[in-house]
Amino acid sequence: MPVMDNRAVYAAVPALIWSSFVYVVQSVGIIMLFRYYSSPPRKPISPDLPKDQLPHITIIRPVKSLEPELYSCLAATFRQSYPASHLHISLCVSSEDDPAYPVLERIVEDFSPTHDVRLFVEEYDPLLSSLDGTNLGPNPKIRNISRAYREAKGDLIWIIDCNVWISRGVAGRMVDRLMGFLPNGKRTTPFRFVHHMPLVVDITPGAEAAGKAQAPESLWKRVLRTAGGGLDAMFFTTTHAKFYGAINTVGVAPCIIGKSNMFRKSHLDKYTNPAHNRNLSPTSHSRGTGVDFFSSNICEDHLIGDLLWKADIPGYRKHGLVWGDICIQPVCGVSVAAYAGRRVRWLRARKWTVLLATLVEPGVESLLCNALFAYAATRLPFFNHVFGIPRTWSATVAGWTLGVSIWAACDRAVYRRLHRLLTVEVDEDTPAFARGSHGSESMPLREWLPTWLGREFLAFPIWTWAVLLGSTISWRGKTFKVRTDMSVVALDDGALVRQNTSVNEGDDGSVVETDDRHPEMQVTPQWEGRPTAKKRKSRGFDSS
Image (cartoon, rainbow, N blue to C red):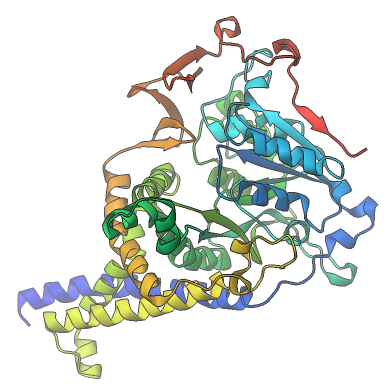
């Protein structure tokens, strides 16, 4: 055999091994998705337990700006079948000037007669304003929820993003999974951490509806302006869903996303203390405990799960996906640039957290994975001898085309199954975007295929830009530099800001720098007719 043929065979062997591995993992994910998301989940057990055995849940919902269907998403927290007496809901916002603040006030007004709900404003947290002499790192989400976590009632903490909607039985099934509750009073081994499969639904009006509201525009401009939501939905319903399901099935490593997570406060407080966690260095003591421990990191959702995964906690299983339930994020009017920016932020935030998984990510996408398999099938003698596959480049191209087509067909089936939302408990309060087959139809093939192709062809350029060509991310209105140790620092006009310095935008859009070490130098927020700085309190509403 010529030397070139030998080299081709040597290259084809790892290509075959990798592509076959990806096919197996993808198949596991598809099987699990069809198994658990094809029928309504069982009724939760915990809501019917005696009150003295029923765990209290502190639900923390960090809010930033107006999100599509924000009221519906937040209201879903209060409409759970879980007894309201054991739900303690914290709505967290950075400032009263946030555009979402009026929506939060409306939520509080509507549900405070029946629920224990508190509205926390970050800029009035005495810890963050240094009144107690303590500072946190720059992570805006941790700073947002810090006080709600510190003042949590009960041991169970459920952190759920403001822009996702959940059906009414979700809280109960999360508690069942975390605590190990089974039917007929039985128990199984509890989990340390449980979470949900995320799903994105694009509610952007169609071309005809959009055309009535604004001046005509070219098809290309409209695609660039609005197609990002479809790309986001495609990613979460195909590639992400398959591998999220597969990895959480085999359980070889933590695989979570910070949309909807539940864990025990006692566990996180204890195991963020180096005295109780041998995986931490003694110097970690200065980072605080609980969620505050992660305030200098940007990928706090994964790091919380990773810490609990690795901690020595006897009697508990590691992570559990609450199969069947989904947290649904509606998106509207997302541009292609915004979609790419979100993917870049996600990849850069996780680059140093899960480096190996990030580096091999292009190899799990359809275009490259099928190219590897097609190359192997047209270079290895086995395929030529057994199946008669010619060892030519035209056969490689044909094999790649066939592989991508089969992959697309599988993705189409998964997309349709998940977007039917068969596991959602539909009632009179269920919004249209969460009704699945009970509401609008799934994306027709003539729209689905271009969206699928667009996502696939954008995957590698986005990965290249995110992983190889930068380390800064924009999140919650601020810019951060991600370090190799997974910590972050805020940036001010491209320069590193001191770790103990906050960067905020002024009313005119200018950057205002405040030194957290000297509270007297800060601009005190104007709270007309409200508590002074030294007595800042978040408003609490209780039905009692």
